Length: 332
Image 1 (tube, rainbow, N blue to C red):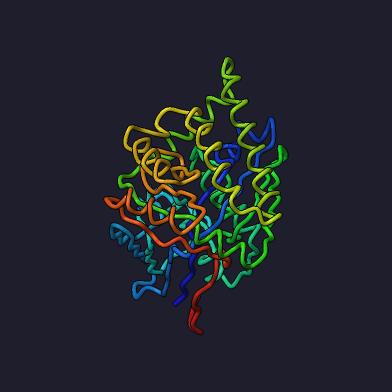
Image 2 (image 1 turned 90 degrees about the horizontal axis):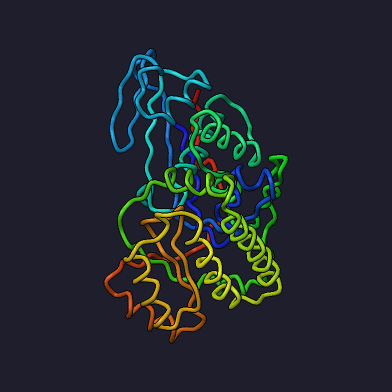
């Protein structure tokens, strides 16, 4: 048996600048962290050597890769030429909630298949291959940040160059600042699922079409905010997170329809009125999780009281990235 895992991510600033429609012209950047919530994928040799068994939210048992319905499984198993296996995926958090689950799945599955083949793959290659699968082969209108976050893990600044290369830079802070940041970010589940592809497709079109200079300028400003956040965190100015999250959220809402809705706006206002200094919806928009920065214990208590009807999830940062959890001696 082989078991791999990849973390989910929380994107703070710069989301959308990782879309090719933007970064190929202007360059982009995102600051994000992965959290201690994971996608797990396991594999063992199937009793039926000429068949494939897949278990996710559904179960598939097929004779050929071409018969697989799940497009990610189908593409990756076809690329690796793998058969005679049983693969199961499990996740700590449901898909479609703004935490990059599809990319965490793709990264974990690719690492699983490389391991099955007895191949070492470094984190950059893993992220690049996941981008190739999702964006180029499956045609998803998404960016690159989720694949790189799932592969590398940790609190990092990602720069997307017009050439397609991605610079990965860790955010270096004092240990006390790191723990303060964890303590001061509250994360709440507002429910529902969104179609990230639909929203990101519109967002990409908006920054590549004529007559939308305001949206291009908003995305550029988000990149400036992201660079400022990197600098201020590395100077241990942790409370800057709140004000910059707020500025980023105001700009993000202007990029495409569907990013926000009355419920999201109402939850945001409640948290801000209770003392939060900034926050945002995670992911492309429309549903899922929201985070808020609360600079002290009193504010955290007030925001929790204001959002008592919502489910809070512990916010703990991960630093491991994609990893191999278990390999027994009989794999492959």
